[in-house]
Image 1 (cartoon, one colour):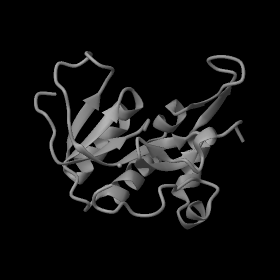
Image 2 (cartoon, one colour; image 1 turned 180 degrees about the vertical axis):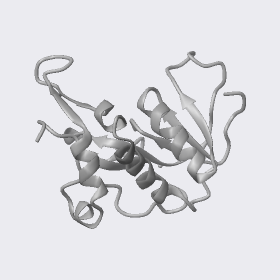
Image 3 (tube, helix red, strand yellow; image 1 turned 90 degrees about the vertical axis):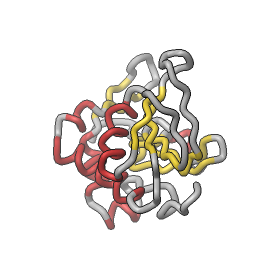
Image 4 (cartoon, one colour; image 1 turned 180 degrees about the horizontal axis):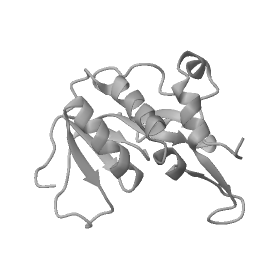
Length: 165
């Protein structure tokens, strides 16, 4: 990491508000937003649902299939970039592991630093910043309509699915 972040940050994927984020915090496929932007449906369709993994009753939404489709992966990154470009964000913080996949691409595209976030004491440096918004690729149904994380808004691209279509 090397340096401590200062200024505005977007915590990207797996879980913010200074310059006003665009929209209502939800771009989920199946909504009116999906009709306006067909990329959202493509992203949702590219995520594989693995029933009862890692245990009975869990419907695991696997993004590996999305990552294997470069055009769809690019669409997901582009949607985040379109949301955050021009907001004066200095750093994008990504939570391991999915955040390490999406965060650097988003940071590069908006001209910001990337800050990897891990469990305490897993990295030698501490990061601090004013969080603008949290962003997730996949929202969880039990938190629908509650998209806040420590009081910060959470932007979700698509909702999790219960089965493959």
